[in-house]
Length: 505
Ligand SMILES: [Zn+2]
Ligand SMILES: [Zn+2]
Image 1 (cartoon, rainbow, N blue to C red):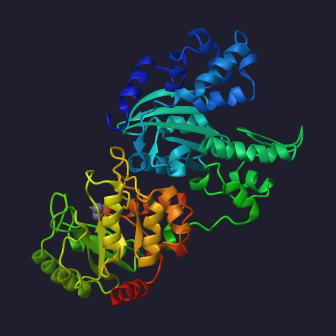
Image 2 (image 1 turned 90 degrees about the horizontal axis):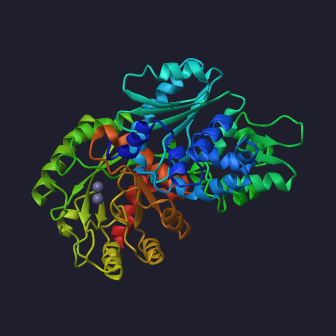
Image 3 (image 1 turned 45 degrees about the vertical axis):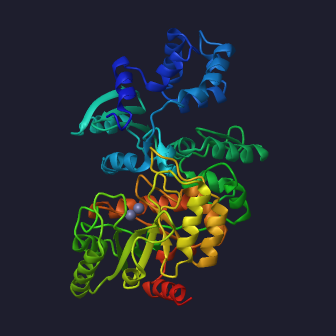
């Protein structure tokens, strides 16, 4: 509960008031009577609702409220969600995905989706909210309230349900199927993206509201699906991960939106750990899991001797692991097992294994794992030294951030990306929930600079391989990354050729 920001939610449960409304009250913008009037007349429960009613100037029309209250709410809005406890994306997805699956299976639910930061793949998310399309919200809610791991119902309205599960608060908005697409578009955000679409609509004399797109007064509102609304605006569906409100609408108008990388483009996973270092599972368990994911190849990459992880490889255990892998290659001919290592870059820029050990490996990943201590310039120099090493293929989690605790290095990333291109070193987009590194914005700069990236799971247990790969892909999509930018969309022979070419230089 603590990790998921549960204290605030519990507090709100005790007060028995939707949390955003409670914060609105505590901001001083409204009295409790005004809040009750607002909720009673307009059915608002969340900050998104408040934004919507302020935008369409509905507050001032409620008996007992006026323009001054509406302005006070508008002024308070930006502060309401500023203090929402944020949880890492990986945790939010792990908590809410089983719930989403069950919601989708309920009778009468035509479709259901995440909204907000979860759907856009933000690194840290404040709310877990879903939209479901169903005619009969009441029976959907009744069924949800029967779920075994439900702790309590925080709030139930005709179309909203807020639940406390054993690990987090989950909000569900149930809309009739003819209106659910508009709700999904609006609640997915970002606000800047929605505003961009709204300006585009109004430049044509139309009106885009949270309830849908109206082309002419009196005409039928388009609200059934996101696709319907985008297509009326002559746009393809813009992937949620890039709905930032910067240049994605312009790119969509010009027809230059890239086809973003997807899970089906991935042929293998080049970064994972076993019980030879700090992973939980054996090499064989990881191989088996990768086979069942349909991969063509995987790389086993445990930690080098001076890594700060709880267990590390020694030169001797590298040898034993090689024997292990040789045996497994015979047992699992359907997948290529690359023997690799995640080697620390030592403080002086040298690598944590001798070249004689490294040259026997199929692939060498290098990392900085230190928290701090060196200046950005010094850290960059260590990276650059490592990248020039002919045996080095890939830099893992380049910013070395640790969500939610530690920000990444403040390096001159343009120099890092240029060096990656020059030395033909691959940069990683690491899908471990605490990494998501490179993050979207940096990944975009990296591929724009011409660098190749790899999307890896950096997995420490077999059952997380799929989720962490998916988190990596989501992060890559936020960086506008396309399949052609990604090393592990390529057949293993091409990867081997790239490694051989660098080694030959
Ligand atoms: Zn690492
Ligand atoms: Zn790792």
